Amino acid sequence: METELGTLNDLSMFLETLPEKLKKTPYDYSIYMQWVALLHATGNVKSLHVARQYMCLQMAIPEEVLLEWIANKEAQPGAHHDKAVLVSIVGLFKIGMHEQ
Image (cartoon, rainbow, N blue to C red; front, top):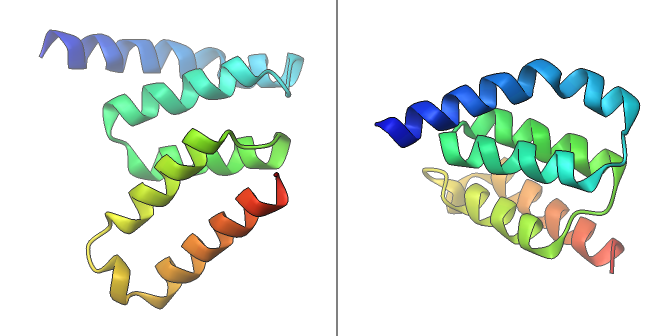
């Protein structure tokens, strides 16, 4: 419980300063990685998806982040039978191929 609370507090403090940080340094890889790591630790899948998309718009996505993103999509209930999820997974693979 202590760790979860610490992570939530870290996330809250980070999110308060995030807009200013991104405004000053929109291509700072470490900011995006910290954002993704904190959201991943909290299990907030929707916000994690938004953070990854925003990162993707600004810079190349590292392979490990892309593979984790694909794994999260595949883990969704019924993902292998949901055409929209499968199309989005194919889109992520295309992003990865484009960034090689």
